[in-house]
Image 1 (tube, one colour):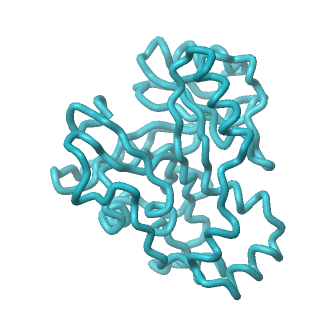
Image 2 (cartoon, rainbow, N blue to C red):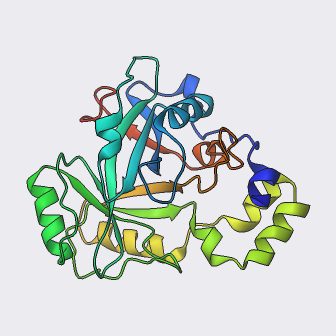
Length: 246
Protein backbone atom coordinates (compact mmCIF):
# COMPACT_ATOMS: atom_id res chain seq x y z
CA UNK A 1 0.00 0.00 0.00
CA UNK A 2 2.86 2.37 0.81
CA UNK A 3 4.38 1.66 -2.58
CA UNK A 4 1.20 2.61 -4.41
CA UNK A 5 0.65 5.64 -2.20
CA UNK A 6 4.11 6.79 -3.23
CA UNK A 7 4.16 6.20 -6.96
CA UNK A 8 0.75 5.21 -8.36
CA UNK A 9 0.24 8.63 -9.95
CA UNK A 10 3.56 8.73 -11.82
CA UNK A 11 3.08 9.31 -15.56
CA UNK A 12 5.13 7.15 -17.90
CA UNK A 13 5.37 8.36 -21.50
CA UNK A 14 5.32 5.35 -23.85
CA UNK A 15 8.10 4.96 -26.39
CA UNK A 16 5.59 5.46 -29.21
CA UNK A 17 3.03 8.07 -28.07
CA UNK A 18 -0.51 6.80 -28.72
CA UNK A 19 -1.48 9.79 -30.89
CA UNK A 20 1.56 9.49 -33.16
CA UNK A 21 1.87 5.75 -33.59
CA UNK A 22 2.02 3.98 -36.92
CA UNK A 23 -1.09 2.60 -38.63
CA UNK A 24 -2.06 -0.90 -37.46
CA UNK A 25 0.22 -0.65 -34.43
CA UNK A 26 -1.75 -1.27 -31.24
CA UNK A 27 -0.54 -0.75 -27.69
CA UNK A 28 -1.88 -2.71 -24.75
CA UNK A 29 -1.25 -4.51 -21.49
CA UNK A 30 -0.97 -8.24 -20.86
CA UNK A 31 -1.65 -10.39 -17.79
CA UNK A 32 -4.35 -8.61 -15.79
CA UNK A 33 -6.57 -10.13 -13.08
CA UNK A 34 -10.17 -9.22 -12.30
CA UNK A 35 -12.64 -10.18 -9.58
CA UNK A 36 -12.88 -13.59 -11.23
CA UNK A 37 -9.46 -14.41 -9.79
CA UNK A 38 -9.26 -15.50 -6.16
CA UNK A 39 -6.62 -12.85 -5.45
CA UNK A 40 -8.13 -9.76 -7.10
CA UNK A 41 -11.08 -7.58 -6.14
CA UNK A 42 -12.04 -5.30 -9.04
CA UNK A 43 -14.52 -5.76 -11.85
CA UNK A 44 -14.13 -5.38 -15.58
CA UNK A 45 -15.55 -1.81 -15.66
CA UNK A 46 -12.68 -0.71 -13.40
CA UNK A 47 -10.17 -2.32 -15.77
CA UNK A 48 -11.77 -0.61 -18.78
CA UNK A 49 -11.75 2.80 -17.10
CA UNK A 50 -8.10 2.42 -16.06
CA UNK A 51 -7.18 1.35 -19.58
CA UNK A 52 -8.84 4.50 -20.93
CA UNK A 53 -6.81 6.66 -18.56
CA UNK A 54 -3.62 4.87 -19.61
CA UNK A 55 -4.44 5.40 -23.30
CA UNK A 56 -4.02 1.76 -24.31
CA UNK A 57 -5.84 -0.01 -27.13
CA UNK A 58 -6.31 -3.42 -25.53
CA UNK A 59 -6.07 -5.34 -22.25
CA UNK A 60 -5.46 -9.07 -21.98
CA UNK A 61 -7.34 -10.43 -18.94
CA UNK A 62 -5.89 -13.69 -17.61
CA UNK A 63 -7.83 -14.78 -14.56
CA UNK A 64 -6.71 -17.82 -12.62
CA UNK A 65 -8.09 -21.12 -13.89
CA UNK A 66 -11.30 -19.82 -15.45
CA UNK A 67 -12.77 -17.88 -18.37
CA UNK A 68 -15.69 -16.45 -16.41
CA UNK A 69 -14.77 -12.84 -17.23
CA UNK A 70 -15.41 -13.49 -20.91
CA UNK A 71 -18.86 -14.87 -20.13
CA UNK A 72 -19.67 -11.88 -17.93
CA UNK A 73 -18.45 -9.14 -20.25
CA UNK A 74 -21.37 -7.44 -21.99
CA UNK A 75 -20.48 -3.80 -22.66
CA UNK A 76 -18.62 -3.34 -25.92
CA UNK A 77 -18.11 -0.22 -28.00
CA UNK A 78 -15.60 1.05 -30.52
CA UNK A 79 -14.50 3.69 -28.05
CA UNK A 80 -13.65 1.31 -25.22
CA UNK A 81 -10.27 -0.41 -25.07
CA UNK A 82 -10.59 -3.92 -26.45
CA UNK A 83 -10.71 -6.63 -23.77
CA UNK A 84 -9.07 -9.90 -24.78
CA UNK A 85 -9.74 -12.89 -22.57
CA UNK A 86 -7.30 -15.63 -21.73
CA UNK A 87 -6.45 -17.43 -18.51
CA UNK A 88 -3.57 -18.29 -16.21
CA UNK A 89 -3.59 -22.01 -15.51
CA UNK A 90 -2.04 -23.34 -12.31
CA UNK A 91 -0.42 -26.57 -13.44
CA UNK A 92 0.01 -29.40 -10.97
CA UNK A 93 3.80 -29.35 -10.88
CA UNK A 94 5.32 -26.85 -13.29
CA UNK A 95 4.10 -23.37 -12.34
CA UNK A 96 1.65 -21.01 -13.99
CA UNK A 97 0.89 -21.09 -17.70
CA UNK A 98 -0.65 -18.15 -19.56
CA UNK A 99 -3.11 -19.14 -22.29
CA UNK A 100 -4.65 -16.90 -24.96
CA UNK A 101 -6.65 -17.61 -28.10
CA UNK A 102 -8.26 -20.86 -26.90
CA UNK A 103 -12.03 -21.02 -26.51
CA UNK A 104 -12.07 -23.88 -23.98
CA UNK A 105 -8.67 -24.23 -22.35
CA UNK A 106 -8.33 -27.31 -20.14
CA UNK A 107 -8.08 -26.90 -16.38
CA UNK A 108 -6.97 -29.33 -13.68
CA UNK A 109 -5.07 -31.75 -15.89
CA UNK A 110 -2.15 -33.50 -14.23
CA UNK A 111 0.27 -33.33 -17.16
CA UNK A 112 1.23 -29.91 -18.48
CA UNK A 113 2.06 -31.27 -21.92
CA UNK A 114 -1.59 -32.30 -22.31
CA UNK A 115 -2.67 -28.73 -21.53
CA UNK A 116 -0.26 -27.34 -24.12
CA UNK A 117 -1.35 -29.84 -26.77
CA UNK A 118 -5.07 -29.13 -26.24
CA UNK A 119 -4.55 -25.37 -26.36
CA UNK A 120 -2.62 -25.71 -29.63
CA UNK A 121 -5.36 -27.93 -31.07
CA UNK A 122 -7.78 -25.05 -30.38
CA UNK A 123 -5.52 -22.59 -32.16
CA UNK A 124 -4.35 -20.97 -28.94
CA UNK A 125 -1.00 -19.92 -27.52
CA UNK A 126 0.82 -20.78 -24.29
CA UNK A 127 3.18 -18.50 -22.40
CA UNK A 128 4.89 -19.57 -19.14
CA UNK A 129 4.03 -16.89 -16.57
CA UNK A 130 6.70 -15.03 -14.53
CA UNK A 131 9.19 -17.74 -15.54
CA UNK A 132 12.04 -16.72 -13.24
CA UNK A 133 10.04 -15.40 -10.32
CA UNK A 134 11.61 -16.17 -6.94
CA UNK A 135 8.16 -17.10 -5.65
CA UNK A 136 6.45 -18.99 -8.49
CA UNK A 137 8.95 -19.79 -11.26
CA UNK A 138 8.30 -21.93 -14.33
CA UNK A 139 9.87 -25.37 -13.75
CA UNK A 140 9.40 -27.35 -16.96
CA UNK A 141 11.56 -26.09 -19.82
CA UNK A 142 11.45 -29.64 -21.18
CA UNK A 143 8.18 -28.53 -22.80
CA UNK A 144 9.75 -26.65 -25.69
CA UNK A 145 6.72 -25.83 -27.85
CA UNK A 146 5.53 -22.81 -25.91
CA UNK A 147 4.75 -19.70 -27.96
CA UNK A 148 6.03 -16.81 -25.88
CA UNK A 149 7.95 -15.84 -22.79
CA UNK A 150 7.42 -13.10 -20.25
CA UNK A 151 10.71 -11.25 -20.64
CA UNK A 152 9.52 -8.84 -17.95
CA UNK A 153 6.95 -9.24 -15.19
CA UNK A 154 6.00 -6.15 -13.17
CA UNK A 155 5.05 -8.12 -10.04
CA UNK A 156 8.41 -9.86 -9.70
CA UNK A 157 10.01 -7.07 -7.74
CA UNK A 158 7.40 -7.42 -4.97
CA UNK A 159 8.70 -10.92 -4.35
CA UNK A 160 12.39 -10.39 -5.06
CA UNK A 161 13.04 -7.43 -2.75
CA UNK A 162 12.76 -7.66 1.05
CA UNK A 163 9.62 -5.94 2.29
CA UNK A 164 11.49 -3.44 4.44
CA UNK A 165 13.50 -2.28 1.41
CA UNK A 166 10.34 -1.72 -0.61
CA UNK A 167 8.71 0.23 2.21
CA UNK A 168 11.74 2.45 2.79
CA UNK A 169 12.20 3.18 -0.92
CA UNK A 170 8.50 3.87 -1.42
CA UNK A 171 8.48 6.27 1.52
CA UNK A 172 11.58 8.29 0.77
CA UNK A 173 12.25 8.14 -2.99
CA UNK A 174 10.42 10.23 -5.61
CA UNK A 175 8.14 8.10 -7.77
CA UNK A 176 10.38 8.00 -10.84
CA UNK A 177 13.45 7.17 -8.73
CA UNK A 178 11.51 4.44 -6.95
CA UNK A 179 10.72 2.77 -10.26
CA UNK A 180 14.30 3.03 -11.49
CA UNK A 181 15.60 1.49 -8.29
CA UNK A 182 13.39 -1.60 -8.26
CA UNK A 183 12.55 -2.44 -11.88
CA UNK A 184 14.91 -4.33 -14.14
CA UNK A 185 14.65 -7.00 -16.82
CA UNK A 186 16.07 -10.24 -15.44
CA UNK A 187 19.07 -11.49 -17.46
CA UNK A 188 17.71 -15.04 -17.26
CA UNK A 189 14.55 -14.05 -19.12
CA UNK A 190 16.45 -12.36 -21.94
CA UNK A 191 18.98 -15.19 -22.16
CA UNK A 192 16.22 -17.78 -22.53
CA UNK A 193 14.41 -15.69 -25.18
CA UNK A 194 17.65 -15.09 -27.07
CA UNK A 195 18.50 -18.79 -27.09
CA UNK A 196 15.07 -19.70 -28.41
CA UNK A 197 15.24 -17.09 -31.19
CA UNK A 198 18.74 -18.05 -32.30
CA UNK A 199 17.64 -21.69 -32.44
CA UNK A 200 15.11 -20.70 -35.12
CA UNK A 201 11.94 -20.73 -33.03
CA UNK A 202 9.37 -17.95 -33.32
CA UNK A 203 8.90 -17.05 -29.67
CA UNK A 204 7.14 -13.77 -28.85
CA UNK A 205 8.40 -11.56 -26.02
CA UNK A 206 5.76 -10.45 -23.51
CA UNK A 207 5.88 -7.59 -21.03
CA UNK A 208 3.51 -8.67 -18.26
CA UNK A 209 1.92 -6.49 -15.61
CA UNK A 210 0.52 -9.41 -13.55
CA UNK A 211 -1.87 -6.88 -12.04
CA UNK A 212 -3.95 -7.68 -8.94
CA UNK A 213 -6.02 -5.56 -6.62
CA UNK A 214 -5.86 -7.58 -3.42
CA UNK A 215 -7.62 -5.15 -1.09
CA UNK A 216 -10.94 -3.36 -1.40
CA UNK A 217 -13.08 -1.66 1.23
CA UNK A 218 -16.51 -1.08 -0.33
CA UNK A 219 -15.93 1.41 -3.14
CA UNK A 220 -12.51 2.38 -1.79
CA UNK A 221 -9.61 0.79 -3.68
CA UNK A 222 -6.28 1.65 -1.99
CA UNK A 223 -4.26 0.19 -4.84
CA UNK A 224 -4.32 1.27 -8.47
CA UNK A 225 -3.76 -0.39 -11.86
CA UNK A 226 -2.81 2.88 -13.53
CA UNK A 227 0.89 2.71 -12.64
CA UNK A 228 1.36 -0.77 -14.12
CA UNK A 229 -0.82 -0.01 -17.16
CA UNK A 230 1.40 2.97 -17.99
CA UNK A 231 4.72 1.37 -17.10
CA UNK A 232 4.58 -1.98 -18.91
CA UNK A 233 3.00 -2.03 -22.36
CA UNK A 234 3.21 -4.18 -25.47
CA UNK A 235 3.00 -3.19 -29.12
CA UNK A 236 1.31 -5.42 -31.67
CA UNK A 237 1.08 -5.03 -35.44
CA UNK A 238 -2.38 -6.21 -36.51
CA UNK A 239 -4.63 -5.96 -39.55
CA UNK A 240 -7.40 -4.65 -37.31
CA UNK A 241 -8.27 -4.03 -33.69
CA UNK A 242 -9.98 -7.31 -32.91
CA UNK A 243 -9.42 -10.04 -30.38
CA UNK A 244 -8.68 -12.68 -33.00
CA UNK A 245 -6.23 -10.57 -35.03
CA UNK A 246 -4.33 -9.15 -32.07
